[in-house]
Length: 194
Image 1 (tube, one colour):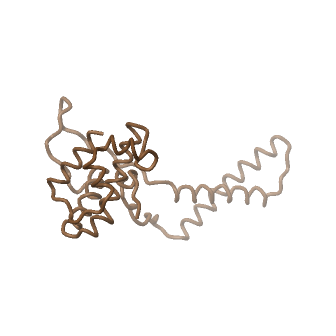
Image 2 (image 1 turned 180 degrees about the vertical axis):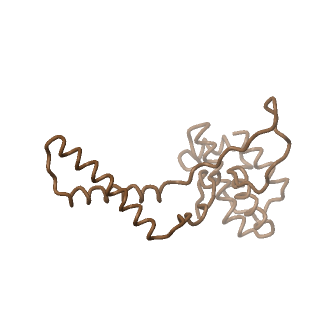
Image 3 (image 1 turned 90 degrees about the vertical axis):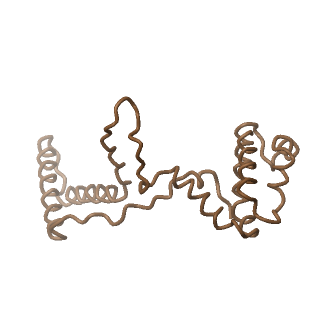
């Protein structure tokens, strides 16, 4: 299983749920569509007759209905509007000191994307080797690519020199046991030095 940096840092938010149904049901929607269609057709026919053109009415009705259908489909497929920013009560650029832990933000999603696999793999070497080690390797490759223009695959000798022997060995060989939190902190510190 391969995970990219975008997957790690991307927001995993789900759509907000079913679209709200307008009150009144289907008959009201059909009546509204018929009224809008009739009004637009009348305006178009009057406009065309004013310039001396005659177009069969059924073509105009079909065109207006097609435009209304496209408008309805695009409205249904458009993303939901961004959430409204709450009213801030703090003055001078300071935060109030509270945190809404139920809010879903990209940072929390990214942290959970690491926290869960690390917790799940804390006592199982195979899980760590299959789930966490490839993610750490991708992070190392991304840091190498961004900072030095190489990856472990494109230039192994230079990548090995940049990573250092302990980090190179850790990323290249499956662990006999999952690393302790202290070991992981040292690995992350080495990755940050890149």
